[in-house]
Image (cartoon, rainbow, N blue to C red; front, side):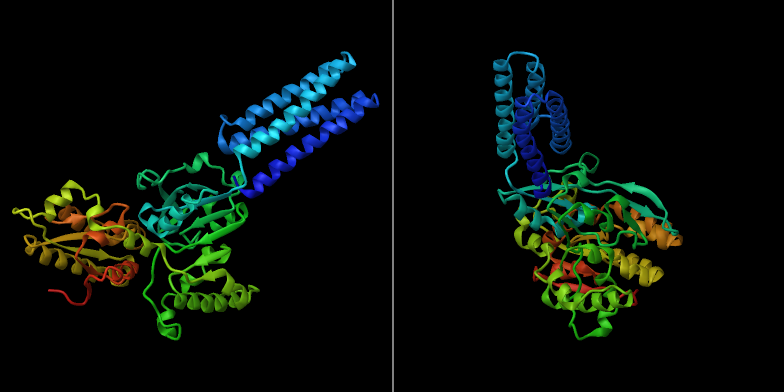
Length: 452
């Protein structure tokens, strides 16, 4: 339970404890009418507290049961007001014991802990949060929730079209809470982690508006943004290269978050510098000192995932094994072919031709090399929204590759599996390259201008 909710609940219980003495005072002075009014107010408070606990944690809590006993004790006092002084005294004693029991049970059931919520949207990007989630999950003083949120494809006019929810695509060891059953405002967690910075500022997809950072910042004491991607490392003095990525530094997620965690100290300096420039242009009053506290360069969880998983620990689908394994039982070399959105949009028609060339060349080498083609998870939605005239051509290319069955087509949520399983990387420059570098395996960047 978040500290804010716990503090509110304890305050309500303490007020009910104090009310017992006031009720006794009213009864001692013969002011039964005031005593009855206060008894009614105490019952309303108990119902409100019980309803809030039920909304957060369901009906089967010891606290709600204790509150029901307390409400019964309130009723017994009202009945005893028409009985003998001895019976009234006994009823008041029962009321004092009942509210003390509420305090004790609540404290045992909801000790002072930190509540942390993770709001991923695309399951394939969970690796950008997973190691942070694991650390929180292992902390005995934290209550941790993973609440995948829905997102929508956008058409060329940025209208919402198809809705996606990927809560069933996370690893089995990650407990999932459904967003419709988890009231973020009511929980008011101590910390919320997000990895989507765009809110309404994306042209291809949008998370559900109720989860925009501009809104959920009010539902937590601390909103933390960790990018779902990694960028190529850049010298903070190389402004020409920085100009190609500076838009990442000043997005709703970076603006509304209380904390932003980026991949390195050099990237931190770039984010600070570019955020400050953009903020000043927009009339935002913010200082470098504030940004130096807000933005931390302590690394990306995506690298933690690569470092923690071995090839022999991977769950490899049977159909992949059939492609990778040679007739003699040995394994072919596996090449991770990555195609990115940015490269496709930059030169779309040439890129289609490049993909055809690459598939043809690797098909000729299929006896020795297993190609693992993994397009960006949002590639199809991007083409549909921004290059619709090429959609059919792209779909035909993908369908033919999959039907022929000589290579692997990876559209799963687990990008890290492709990184760990493969022996080399070939494809576009993208955030995947930064992760792949950590493996020490060969990397070759494709050139769309070189085609046969």
